[in-house]
Length: 74
Image (cartoon, rainbow, N blue to C red; front, top):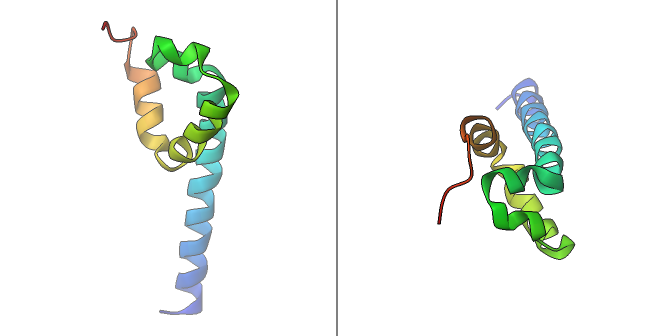
């Protein structure tokens, strides 16, 4: 692997996780309540546990936030 290819991979991973951090902040600070009504009352410690997962799975989080019209009925 060339140095240019390695730099490209590292840059793309950095961009992926930078966008993921922004999406995770929005999700943890209030967007989770749009997907799950019980998440509105989640304590800060639980929100911090969700943050890394939301950061890594940000494409799925964005898809859910923009396509789900109402919270699921339980």
